[in-house]
Image 1 (cartoon, each protein chain N blue to C red):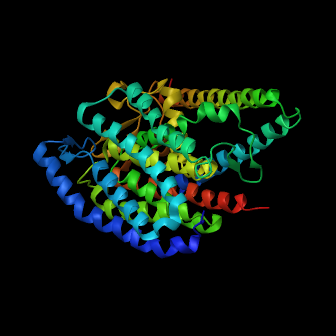
Image 2: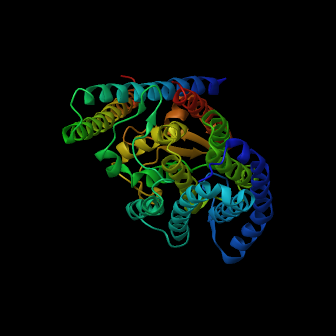
Image 3: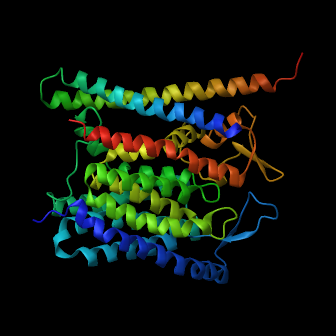
Length: 79
Length: 346
């Protein structure tokens, strides 16, 4: 049964990642379309996709450091 | 030029599958024996007594997959000219990563050197695109519900990562017996299903060849492994998927299939601070205690998907974790099938 919990958590994680990927691309594409078809549109695309990558890594870094901090908290001996 | 339909490929696919299965079944015991004779063995770190196991299963995978593709070429004849070009590009990219992995299996490369060398695997695809621009079409990937996205400059910037990325991602998760061929087998089944949704003979032939090889190879790599995949095997399998994504223009679909690998890869890269070989890591994310795999409670230890799974589910034996990973791959596989359906959405 303990693996059912892992399966449910991973189902949520993968589905949320997949959905957010589609939604973010949709958002970026909508913004890109606001600019007339030119080199500027390509540059805007480059900037927005790079920004997304950077924010993603920063977000994951934040989540992992939060998880590490919680583990450290649990590992402390009781006062 | 004659375009091959999915129904033409359907006749060839059982033979291609059988060829991969039989060649792997005949070849694997011989390769294991040869490895033992030549001393190409490594200790299995997760088992009591650390038994020595043949190390480069990639040799079997590369030979068997190549022969299956040759069988496919022979069966489909000149009508499948475009398919031959596209499968050749995929195979050549895979073989470049296989050779890099094989060198690493024998001589040992650093994490950064290995990653940089795998960037070369995109060369056959770009080369064949320059010769056959109508057959190997590059650029503007399809995303479900959106259509062809406007990745212009950035597509060419990240193109070298298209094969190297999946190759290294699969390599990063190839830590426990049976995980890589098991997960790839589930991914291959999903590719076979999506071939019918997308009407793609390329996907069907690829899935038949790889499916036959992996189904036959899995029992040898499953717990307790008689042969490891080695970097030659994991880099080869990952590179094949990456090359298929570019050549088949199914980048988002393959990215979906590799979601667990991507999550694991990002966790490792972010917490390790770059590409590092397991030999270069001080604190381990997972500890072995009496044959049980336990998530490290050390707040300074790096993160990996396995550590997260073991924190959620508790300690596990290696075979339990391996089966769990294979079961978990059904999630990205299901999402990939949904992706294919949505890609056909008007």
